[in-house]
Amino acid sequence: MIFGIFRRRDDSSIRSVYRQIVAQARQPHFYTDLRVPDTSEGRFEMIVLHAFLVFHRLRNEGREAQTFAQQVFDLFFQDMDQSMRELGIGDEGVRRRIRAMTESFYGRSSSYSEGLVTGNRKALSEALLKNIYGGHEEVVAAERLVDYMQHSLKVLQQLPETEIRNGHVAFAPLDPQAQKKQ
Image 1: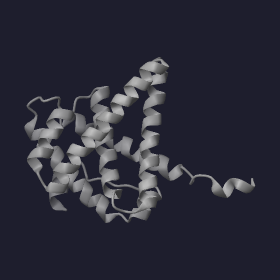
Image 2 (image 1 turned 60 degrees about the horizontal axis):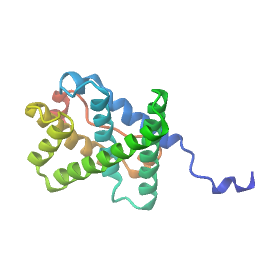
Image 3 (image 1 turned 180 degrees about the vertical axis):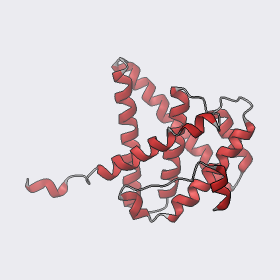
Image 4 (image 1 turned 135 degrees about the horizontal axis):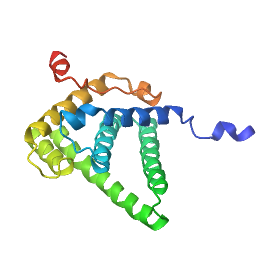
């Protein structure tokens, strides 16, 4: 096809990054040791958190990185849309839920970013308590999740932006002892 050169980039790297985000978000450690609710909402929150970390890493990397991040974001919400449809939710219900999820994503990203950029652990911990733990008194777990987020950003910063766009991401080890050694 002569116009094939004008097609969007091969989406295998986009799919790879999204799969890695989801795989990390599904690690049992979050639901057992860090007491994230093992519900559809809790899993969504962990996908949002990991997607946020990748997007935060790419935020100042230029147009290609921004385009890539947007494509991963789009795939995330296409996946959410498809999952709801498979559950039998109708068009209007899907649209309403996707809109709410998108607003949730942006709200969480804003509060997580503010806490990370300013170095305000307390604000970040409070955002996690509200969003992930539903305001329950999981202060120790939220603090450990703050540590994990900060460490994951350091790990992601070590990856060249081109490596991420080629489909490779990495997060902090889930073993707290391994985090302290690095």
